[in-house]
Image (tube, rainbow, N blue to C red):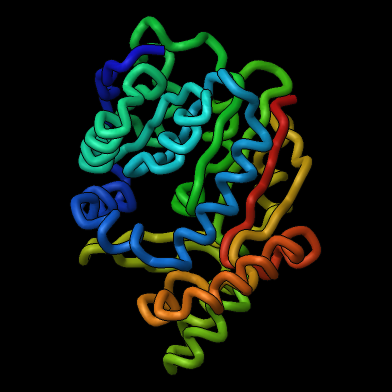
Length: 281
């Protein structure tokens, strides 16, 4: 794997979610990266990533944003192709990769999940024919309508038996319900119970998200993938809706983070995010 950035794929108009996050990219780390609740949830995910992928594994990151997870994995011996539809997000990631001196282990590539089938013809020659695993953190797949189509395209990029870790919004977040009710926003508190497309907004740009259950995602990923593990991320650790207030209580957050570790399996479906570990069949 080389340090170069491969050419973006030819594409149609970018999906609305990608446009929204492209607009917020320059402020993304400053706004979200400093929040203690977000850092706690990311730590939980990164432990699972290291557990699933052995050193020197060639990994495909989907919706990698500004590169925090790729840098964490690459600094611990993994090789990563970081993909995202937002070129502004990738520009931020590239700067952080250079600062970390990890260009030899991370390559970035502009492509959306909806165009994943185009990845083989647009990758630079040094990319592996089949990846050893793939992952996506913090709900990129909640913005996808055709999960089965993405799963089929992803399957073609992975070797048999390869693990895939997807972190999606949970179908019912107890923390979000409590926080939004405390704010007096009952509609936001129970929005995850709605089916179909739910309106969302980032940086003044509108898009839609969905809140499928782990079983619904697994059904759409079959027959290419088999669900092997489900873990909750952010059961007691509150969602970002509790910020910036909750960051003022680091000792409380440390206790909540410890509680999350013990409850990640039995209470997974009540978490802010749910980690789904699949195996390529």
